[in-house]
Length: 306
Image (cartoon, rainbow, N blue to C red; front, top):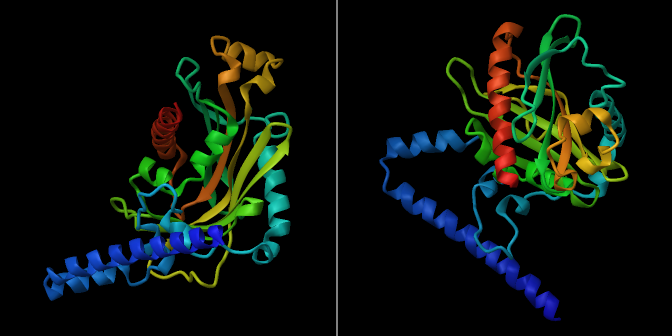
């Protein structure tokens, strides 16, 4: 009885907070001219309800964040992704294993062994469909703390938005929390001469060995999200593997690279990303941009995890 009352009370609190946010927005709209109101409505009219829910920030730590009020999904809804899950988990392990997928023909963009993260970054142009060339990246680095801390941080939609001002919308369409799988909507704002981009992709987090995890994503189609006024990009394969740095204490390369670190205090990450933004960017132009953005991003992640 007591737990039922608590659940009911939390539900009322959620509804009350969401209702208050909507009332505040309506009051603000009353103060605008009709012309401004119409312009404001046009900005949002193609957004689904879960986009607006993702914008409501609840300050009470005992209440779930607003974006979790949208579709949570069920295990049955994710049956269609079972084969995809198996394939991409295997693929990301191979891409992050330099023994299986060597980096000999990749270009090294940076090797910051003396930085806090020890970031080492590679790039390579890959032909994906017989004609389209896409710039792929691989990198390795360390972060402070246990793997679960990094996994939770990277899966936090609000925190990821705070790291990248280019993100317009970022939220789960549906989630299967028990099996750590999610279908996600991500869109980027227009930048200079580049129009807005959007992605819909499936993401899976899985423990693949003792104290070793992977997180991997790949684009999927969803009838609820037809392509409208944005260019639909494609996540061909993106993700990472992570494990405690102490797992690799007998690895000569790791021992030499991080010899000044206390292995028990860090986790080791390998990332791979192959995403088609539907842009034709020459490799010589992409190298500088990717290097600058990745160094900045990994530095921010490291700082947030300290």
